[in-house]
Image 1 (cartoon, rainbow, N blue to C red):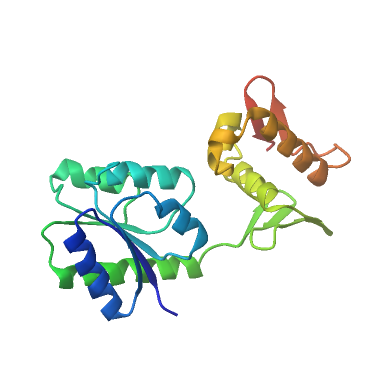
Image 2 (tube, rainbow, N blue to C red):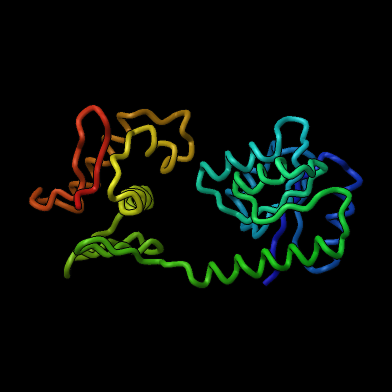
Length: 227
């Protein structure tokens, strides 16, 4: 199955060169001169790697990738940038880049780096855990199915995501703003009442008798998964 690469570079000549080279190698390629439609494509299509310039007309590439990471979009990224100082390269890796190559670049080296990142990400996806455990709960992330003892409970995708976040942060009190940022994608249009309702429904599903009290409400602060 062909790997898909998304390229963002505001230099039309470089963008066309990258598109031509990657297509000839055998990748499916989509290219953009800015980030305007990138999020939409990432949500609608299966993209295996992003090649991202940093000096873009509307935003620095590192800020854009940081925004994607905050929305749990973890598509591998290689920065291709004229910003080449040690501090600038470090900035790229700190926001979640998988590699960083400076302009002007050697195309053969870039291709090798692309293959290396794709190889690593493919290996990681094979080893991805699809089921997570907590106490007497077993959460199937693919099937949106929670097993508690011998009982199976069907969850919505949102409820699965909520419970996953709680399990990953089981020793932390999670505020509503944190949950909005990490669970809901369209954070601007989500209010704290929506969070309260969603968690109430989740609690009713996983603890209908209210005797296990998996999720505790910490008044004025947020929610905590009980130990």
